[in-house]
Image (tube, rainbow, N blue to C red; front, side):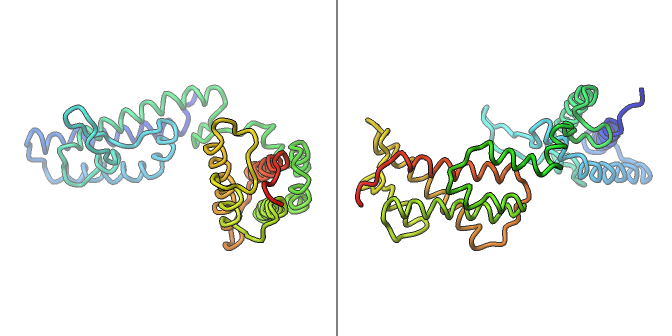
Length: 278
C-alpha cells in the first residue's frame, strides 16, 4: 500500500530537522569546524525545514494541541517559547536542541494519529484534513434541509418572524441582527422602557432594583439576576451592536442557527417573567 502523501511530507520534515540538528551539534556542541560545503548544506536543510514548517505546522498543532517549549525554573514553568522558531534559528541557541527534540516528538505523534485516522477514512491522505461525512456534505448543499432545521428548532415567534425569510435567502448576518433587535424590542415592551442597547439591559435586569425579575432565583436571587443581566448585556454589546455598525460577513448557516437559538432562549425566558413595574 502506497504511503499517504501527508505522511511522506511529515517524515521529510523530520529528516530535515534531524539533519540540521546533527550538523548544529557538531558545530556548536562538539566545536567541530565544518567545511564550507557542509555549512551550505546545513543552511539548505534549515531553509527547507522552515518552508515545510510553514505548510505543516497548522496540522501538527491541530492534532497535538502544542507548539511551545516550556522552560522550567525551580520546578515551575518560567516561560513558554515558540518551539518551531527556536529550533530553526540561524544562530545556535542553548535551547535549540531541546526545541528540535520537542518538534520531532510532535511530528511523531502527528504521524501516528494520522495513520490511524487515514486508515479509518477520517482524514484525507494527501492533505491530512478531516473528511466531511457524506450526510453532512448533502446537508450543506441542500438548502431545504437548513429550513427544516430552522423549523425544527421551534424558535420564539418573534425570532421566526424577524429572521426566517432572511435565513431562507442566506442573509445570515442580517438574520442575526434582526433576531437580537427583536430581543431588544421585546425587553422594551416588557419593561415599558425607552432605553436601548446595553443601558436598557443593565437597567432592566439590575440586580439591586430590577424591572424584570428572575423568579426562579430563590436564595441566590442577586447572583442569578446578575447572571441573566450579563447574558442580555452581552447579547446587546457583543452580537447586536457589532452587526448594526459593521459590515460583518456570516456564511455559516449552522452558526447562524446557534445565534438565533440563543436569541430565542432569551425571549422565551422573559415570557416566564413579570415586569416589576408597568
